[in-house]
Length: 444
Image (cartoon, rainbow, N blue to C red; front, side, top):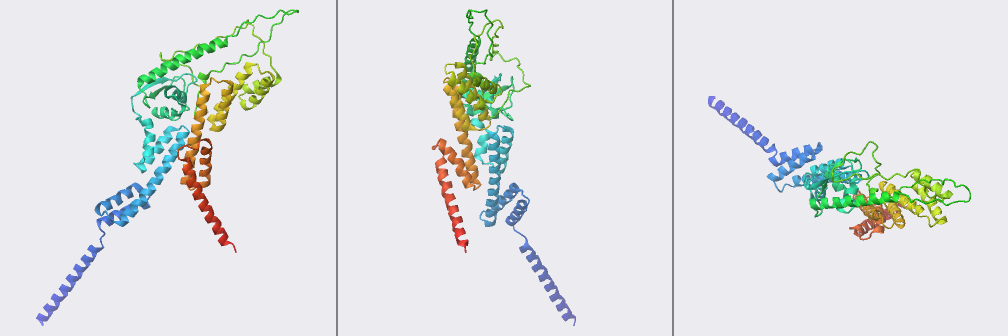
């Protein structure tokens, strides 16, 4: 009897032991592998919107198991999302760049790189002209009255369009906000050396002095002996003396920048001499009277109010009545030029181009007008080409086609505008064809 009890107890113990072993084995098989643990953690981060952390977990999973399909799929999905976010930041940076708000643009480019470290375009934007922002290969320029960042671009690089390089090199938040006396770094770019920049500076100062001397001479009126009338002579009316336009003082600006009211002239470094004051006209000096008409007087009133669009047609009527009056031609040149500046600052580039072209007709020596004409065309093409890319990326094909057609009208060979238009038009026609087919099939 005792033997039977012992055998029964032994069997029972064996059963219990085998059950425990089976349970432990089952637990071991239920535990996820290391790869699965990484994938699960990655999914958790992905759900929280922590895409960079999720990507790290998926890459760890692939380190353990390089062929794991789940990890590969999740990695591709996260990378696509990160690239999309980076592209959005990059496009925002471009928009701020066009506005000259470089501090905000820089932040967007950095955000793009944080999401996609290999974003080449964003890297290039952060190192303009291939020169690091901390480079010491530059000269210093002290801003004078009438100068701007785009004017410096013209002086040193021979083209207005390089003003963003100077703005970014100086870490400027807004290139339109500059003051007299401010010292800006001009980097040596595009094959130029510091010595070349100094020579360009000296040449500009020499030309500026020459223009100021010429302007001073022009401002001195000729002394004309009054005719002896039969009756006692009367003093002639003294007309208003118009300022002779000075091309060197007209400054191309990326946006409308009035002269700062709080900015005052400060001592300038020896490299830039003070410009001489205009020679005043003494009250006793007789001045020849100017024959005017009603149209001219009205035009001058609009001109002084800076209503150039209303002044121009009246000046033209006055010119038709008195074609030999050179002063009217000078007024027309100045009106077209100032109107062009206003349109340029409002980003009305085609209208500005027309105004500067009209200004050249009244002053063929206005090289600044020709520079503006080219800048208007280049800026217009670049702006609308990029807008086309933006709309195409958002599948807004009609808007993309409209933007690229505007570029094609001015320059059919500009970048890839023709091939882009062909793709957009083909895709647009296909989508429209599908829509028409669906409408027909849905008709009763």
